[in-house]
Image 1 (cartoon, protein in one colour):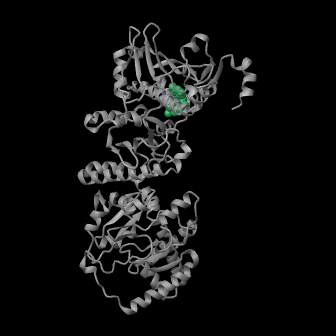
Image 2: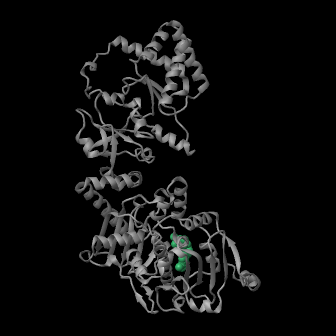
Length: 640
Ligand code: ADP
């Protein structure tokens, strides 16, 4: 950035070795690596090779515009050299390299969101060691096997090389490379690991070869292993798996490719491998993981599908899938996009849009066919990624119907997950809508009084408990002509749907009683004033006395609460619904008829406050609530 300034201070300052502290997170991570009880230390090699491969990718990409950067070393490769005499293992690449500042920034801080999520997960979970394996932790994993690490690096095109050294602990040194060191690294980066006593097996070529083959076989650059005799030999296939034909490949090949592309340890739950030829030609290799990655809820919400153009890696930042498919991992290799396409150009590129539509359709199609062919496997996928897929119900109008058909829900009908198709097939006579309730947990919703009338009729209700559920239900949704309808909003009319228990059915309402009800409701409304937007007789309740619902045009109350918690938007006034047959409401009616105004008001406010409590909210004035409750209880006790 500031070349003049840097060179002015260079002779004095930078020529000497400088010690730098690690960022606190790195220190924490290193401490963990050093004392790691994690047994699968092999992954350090995968991480370093992957960094070397990324560095080669970056340089290959930059050199499209600036071919002079390739001077110094003509080919891209990653070379592994064990040295039993010194007890060191070297992993060297001819990639982009790092200058002094990059060494300090990149190898002194935690940049990747995955590592941050890992540290967070670690502070929440007790069993930390297992987590290391669940996703890579990058360069620092090398401290599991080395007690000292020397990194010598030369940025492509630069005349100078720099050396970074650390023994873990609090910090690292950065110094200019000696002539001998600089000569060893004409371009790129050499990581020299001084292996710990119990990690000396990583000096055995057969051991190294085994690890490379199992974790890094698909890396596109040659990985060369130098044997005891000093001879280098390429040990990986270095071919683009996605360009090969399906018939050549075994599930095991795919699993390995998945693990290495996604830095994962699980099996892919779904694999898609196909080629498109026509207006555009491209090869696709996509995976759906079987376990959700740690950063699934990452607010950046980016997909991780890598874009290659004719076997050259371009970016993993190209929005090749919508955010609601961000758990999909893999590669798209285009034959048509220009090699020098810039990341900015990709953003509104019609070819990319076309690819995205194609990929999205294929992924959904694959999910649909899994759902039909193997319901159990599909249920697992939905459990892991359903909350993310549901974002599409909100964001993607075109895919809404398709996604709704893919969705699975807990319902009041049993403990399993149900599709809307199954729900609709089991509709009650005269039922024309699909009912749901949004809430914090299935247990909480199950005890919600708003379910009472539905329960009395055996009507199935969807129990929506993901935070996203409050959002997508705002959009009109329907399946097979049946609209989704919240039981906590607007009117419900179960009038034509028969009750399960026939004895309760069809008690004809006397005209006189109806008029009394209306008079009572009008006076309750007057007592409660503007704390509610309306008061009415409830169709939802059978056992409870009162509940609150949102107006038909307003927002669902659960969504309002969610937004209010995030300070986004206030709370609107709900409608109070009264169960006209409940004893407390009858007592209110009696007090009202006898002109015991104070008592009637106490009961009215108590009904309102308990409806708030049933929704998991505080009464608006807790002290007044307690006072009224006490007054009524005391009155009741004295009377008894
Ligand atoms: P990640 O690779 O996920 O970003 P790491 O901790 O492994 O995380 O590496 C941090 C950064 O250090 C990388 O993003 C990269 O910029 C740099 N780096 C690591 N290894 C190399 C290398 N061999 N060549 C060039 N840069 C590297």
